[in-house]
Length: 311
Image 1: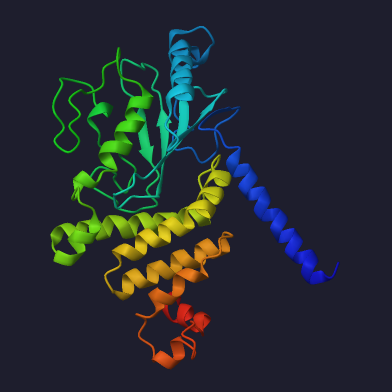
Image 2: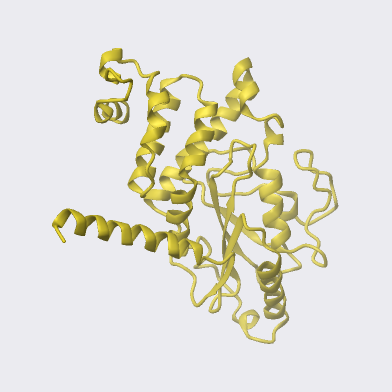
C-alpha cells in the first residue's frame, strides 16, 4: 500500500471511530467521578446525605431512574457515583427556533436540603448573552427553580414554582428546552418572515441565531468534559442541517457571511465534507466575478476568499 492510500485508510478509520463512539452514547449514564471543570465541584456538600440509604440518596436514585426511562433523545445527562449531588446535562436546541441544532450545557447541584429546595443550575454560557433567561454569568431564570407561591410565568406559561412533592430535575430540563429555548420569546413564526421586515424582532432573532452559532464554534474548540465524544459526533452528523438552516436566515451582511464561513471551516476540520455549501454563499462575496468562479461556474480561490473573511 502506498503512502497516500495508507493515509486515507487511517483517516477513514478515525472517522469511523468517531461515528461509532457517537452511536454508542447513552442519554443517561452514571460515571464514577465528576469532571474537574464542573461548576459546583467544590461546593461544601453534606457527606451524610451522600451515604447509601439516606433520604437524599434515595431521592437522587429515583431521579436517576426517571431520567433513564423518560429522557427525550434531545437531552443527555451524566451523573456521578462519588458525587450524587452533581449532574451535567446537555440540551439540543429545538427546531423552528434560533437555537435549532445548538448545544446548551448545564451543571446541576442538588443542595443538602433537596428536594425541599430546588436544584441549582449553572449554564455554560461561553460569555455569550444568549437570551434574557440565560445569563452570560451562568444564571438560569425559570420559575421551577424558585420556591414559593405559584405564579404564572408569562414567557412560558409555567404556573408552578418548585414543589418538593411533584417537581424533579427532568421537569426542569424539559422546561428549559421548551420554554427558555423557545421561539415564543421572539416570534413563533421563525426568522424568515422577521428578516423580511427587518424590525426589532428580527434583530433579536438574528442575535440569538448568531450567538447560538458562535457557541457551536466554542464547543468544538473546548467541549465540557464527559461530552467530548458527543460534541464531536453530534456536529459531524448535524453539520449539513446547521449550514442549511443558517443559510436560510442570512441577510447579506458580512457579519453573517463571516460566521457562516467560520462554521464551514470548523465543520470541515471536524471531519464533515461541506464544500458543496460554498458556491451559492460565495456569490455574495465582494470580489470580482472572475476571482470567484471559473468558466464552468465552479468556485475557485476558495482559500483566498476564506482568508479574506476569516483573518
